Image 1 (cartoon, rainbow, N blue to C red):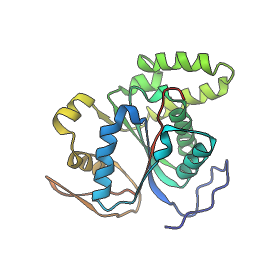
Image 2: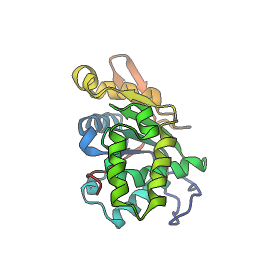
Image 3: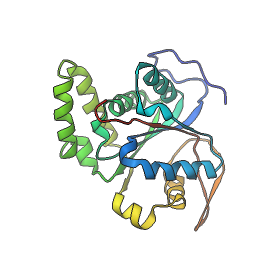
Image 4: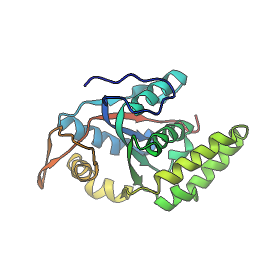
Amino acid sequence: MAAGRYAGGSSNPPETFEHQVFLSFRGTDTRIFVAHLFSALKKAGVRVFLDNDGLEHGRGIQLKLYNAIHHSEMSVVILSLGYADSRWCLDELAKIMELHKSKTHSVLPVFFDVEPTVVRNQTRAYMGAFKMLEKRFGGEIDRVKKWRWALNQVASLRGLSLDADSYYKYDGSVAAIARLFSRAIPVRALDFGYVGTSEGFSRLNSDSLLSPCMGSQN
């Protein structure tokens, strides 16, 4: 699919979307889960881009990811306990939610072993993360406020909740991931094939870009 042109800070949607789904996650928290999702998408015949540069973020990589978000119809944001430890994840989320606010981008949050209220109000593990972030980025108050705003907004959306222990112990399989996302990803007017599961064939509507925003406050 041809990509629309991207102009740096523009929030206008491209004429055509290069990606249907942009997946935002912190790799250190969700590595196995994301590997299963990656496998499910590949088995469905979906084109999957895995950002292997995620371990070493820099300005160039960040612009590349922003470009990919802009050219995606929707994002799936996997919010884990350590998601807020990474400024790269938070910057990425802020960009996603800015597009969502402009009505040009759909968002599906996945609360992976963390409660939506913790994310929305930045309590518990997220409170500790922000104490560290505010010390480190005390001179960038507007940036920190935007991170808080983005977390509040994404946690107010309807999404999926997964308990990590139960998932890995009982249902941590490629087929389970396929079933989960075939029901949850509301991508409009897309038909990218089917995924075989124990319940028969479930539609998996997605063309995905995987971007692990990794590192601890990097």
